[in-house]
Image 1 (cartoon, rainbow, N blue to C red):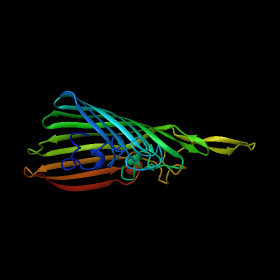
Image 2 (cartoon, helix red, strand yellow; image 1 turned 180 degrees about the vertical axis):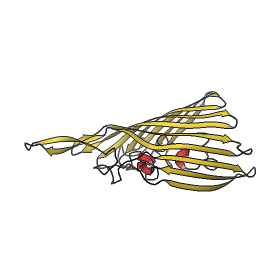
Image 3 (tube, rainbow, N blue to C red; image 1 turned 30 degrees about the vertical axis):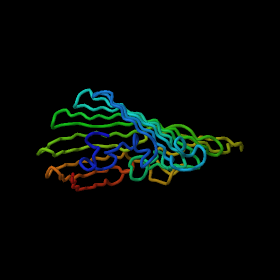
Length: 295
């Protein structure tokens, strides 16, 4: 997580700004697994985690337990070349079982995730999806009163399954990114003004295909390639009926933490959502006023 977005009580509280929906959002909730945090020096650290979605379930062989079903292994190398710069370089491999979720992006997918996170598939045709996710983040306190932060994640997802007795296969590429600035002690010690721009999950390339049987002009059965889901996100054999994709969603958040006392802060914030769910439609504005007590 980025330094200036990790604390929902003190920073921007909207979920996608706090946690990367691709890198850490595909597997969420209370899952069995393991975690290790190693600090080699003040400049280098390593964090790694393994999670099993169905680790506590007694299901068929290969479909659950610690190593079956949906699993995730992720690691991040932390680099601090100076006290004012914090860099994170990470990789995550996720296997999403078709029996666990109907969203291409696992637990990161839903109508509330934004962008292409809403894309669902038919688990009768897809047995599992593997995600290879590369991630980078940066926090840079350029001056005591001015900082920048951001992150970028790129995902290549491969789909596996059968349709009409023939394999469903191929891969798609997706990304998400965020960039923002922070003004610590703005108009008073302990205050913090933040503004950030976020692009939710966005599919940039779709090469997933299946086949169907058709008859040619001579009456012969021939197999024809058919996209598993349409890049325009219309209804297909794998998707749900949605409006066609006609925009790229953008999220803009602004918050100002005002320190009233040593133990009380008040934070008004506003979120602007443009092109929600990658559909050209009226924007959404959300306002929030938050009081945080510290003990």
